[in-house]
Length: 117
Image 1 (cartoon, rainbow, N blue to C red):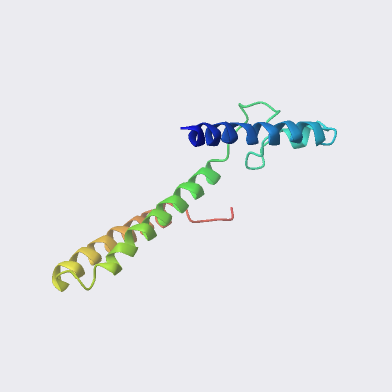
Image 2 (cartoon, helix red, strand yellow):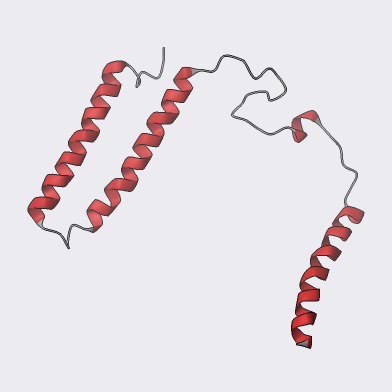
């Protein structure tokens, strides 16, 4: 019982000592506008929040997320190749790839993949 009390008291005592020493021994804090503000994708957080947002940036981010999720869905297909029926595996894989290619064609047709305008 005594050892449990000692271990609990030490686990509370050591962080308190470390935090106290960190505040006492730390150098003088210099508050700078740039250093104290969060970095938000290049936007100035001190300016108006109602500035126009680039829709192109949003579309590129969504396309990146879609293709990132596709990679996460394709990897298990490769892993289950040995344990599944070859006809069902081929059919489902081809259907999945056709849906992805259809989406890519649609994005290309809509002009979402034109990077420079």
